[in-house]
Amino acid sequence: CSNSNPTGPIDTTLCDFETVESVNDELFSNLHELVATPFFKFFQVDLYRECPFWSDEGFCDNPSCGITSVDESEIPERWRAKSLSKLEGSKIDDRHELPGCYYRDSDFCFLDDNTGGDYYDLTLIPERYTGYAGPDTRRIWRSIYEENCFGLSEVSLHSGPNPALVSLPDRMTDAFRNEDGDGGQCLEKRVYYKVISGLHASISTHICQEYLNQTTGEWYPNLQCFINRVASHPERLQYIYFNTVLLLRAIARIGPYLQAFDYCSTGGHEDDAETLAKLGNVISIAQRAGRFDETVLFRGENANVLKEEFKDHFRNVTRIMDCVGCDKCRLWGKIQTTGVATALKILFELDEKALDPAANHNLLQRSEVVALMNTLHRFSESLAAVDNFRRMWKATSAEE
Ligand code: FAD
Image (cartoon, rainbow, N blue to C red; front, side, top):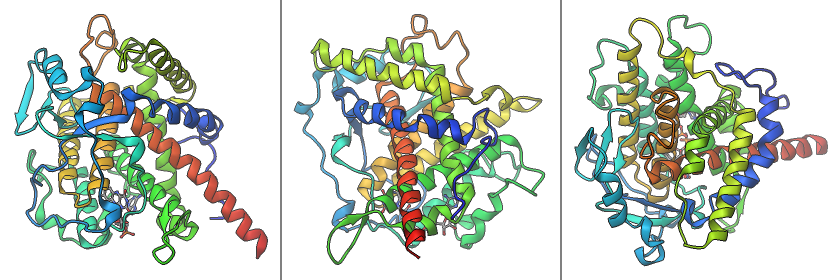
């Protein structure tokens, strides 16, 4: 832990840790303001869909797990469900529908079809310690890691998490810890593992940064929690940087499309100009630090099959979110898996022509844009928290 500052290149990217650290303050402050604007702070989602994989998903009755939705009348009219489904539904022809949600061939996630669900003001719902833990959470994380089994013939597609695998011991995730020594894992699987492990580490960092002292009721940064869950596994910390670079690269790539997107949310020109200015800053940082070469993935003979499997499995991850038994965790789980899935789509599905806002203005749904930016905000906030924990660690070491 005393040497927990990673240095040098971030594996599978063209970027290094130092570059990400050098931009993170600026990135975080711009994102923090951006996600507080009306366009980015309201998210509509159906949080109460049935878990498709098992019936006893459990639930968290801790008050910290609860969240409050906002009334539809508080949402700028053009972003309400009715207007959205008219706007989005009419132009999409390759939709695969399930009750309440759908995906298109290019998507890495299931999206809500805006026929149900509530609106949430994300600025009022911090991702932090909720007390949701135990066998239910372990089963969910394990199932998510199991989805890395793509490319193996015994794993059938569309099958969802295999209940037999779900009951394997905790060390199961180690089977996918494939940085060194395993030799046989393909790059795509390593990327999948990094994405998931980095997301898991980022959620853990938020839990530790805003931890609840159950005796005093105070929220505080819990250094020991961070050491146990993240810092004592240096690769987990590195994967937070990895996800940040991946998201930045996606945002850099889709920059012109994002700048042409319709943010006209409140009717006030000043608000919209402010949103665009902050977005412009984020895109410019993304162009500097989002150095990731997506062209090295999904190449070779079976590239298309592998990509379809990757998509299929990532879509399953977004459905596993319906099994999360804590409302607040489920909300942020859905946002972040949608945000990462959107980045993956931008990197691996869309060619330069598709990215042209004039030719393809219906490329992303509003919910994807909102999820993408809020997810990057989560990762950037985690890196800021890591800085805080480093300072706490130094102070503790100096005292000893
Ligand atoms: P867990 O975090 O549950 O991890 C289970 C096992 O996975 C560990 O024992 C370890 O072997 C392995 N592991 C842990 N981290 C990593 C990693 N980064 N990479 C690879 N392997 C790893 N709780 C909250 O308090 N607030 C939240 O907002 C919240 N959101 C959640 C969102 C989702 C989608 C899920 C599934 C859970 C969420 N939880 C949340 C629960 C939280 O993530 C933990 O599961 C819970 O705190 C119990 O932690 P744990 O120490 O048992 O280990």
